[in-house]
Image (cartoon, rainbow over all chains, first blue to last red; front, side):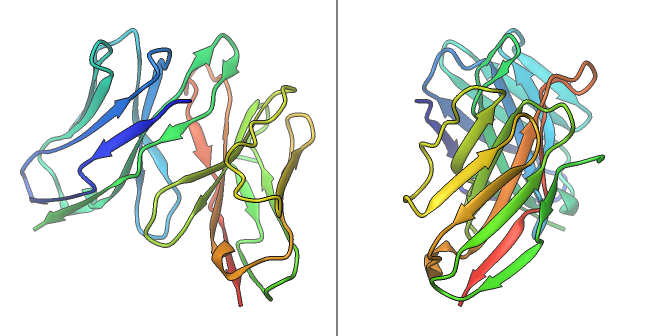
Length: 115
Length: 116
């Protein structure tokens, strides 16, 4: 099955700096890569996702890049703010037509943004 | 409903008792997942249902754990003879094909299980 590795496990940055979280996956058939943010005591929520037919996707301060050849994808947060502090999870999945595959999650990255 | 709903929100049970956790997915979502999250830890996969296909039970930690889903509706996760190491938050998520939201998975608020 798929194996998703996520690094680093913890990341501390100063407010206004950028943060980058990296994930690798093992199954070349994976074609959907979401990122989830989980604030303390809350449920994970999707912040951005990318499909394998796209190399990069951006939404305001958040961007995701995908390298299919190397089987890795990254989350980039620019101009970090204290409210970005949370645990971030990457995931990989295979979608075939109407069949939505299992979601394989990385172990998570605790991001702390210091004011 | 508007989102994924889980019940109960909190459950305290005595060691050795059975518990049943419920998940109401978003209507029309064909895929449903159960995860376990211990305090400060990641999302541990338990089981995945997709439509009428046989579920992927490969994440269930022991035969004390079982789950059912009727069609594309409610799912229940049952833990028999609970142990203290079963204490965790149990999260359910559902996914469907949405022309606007794509295939985003939505999580419920979780059930916090405490075994005493």
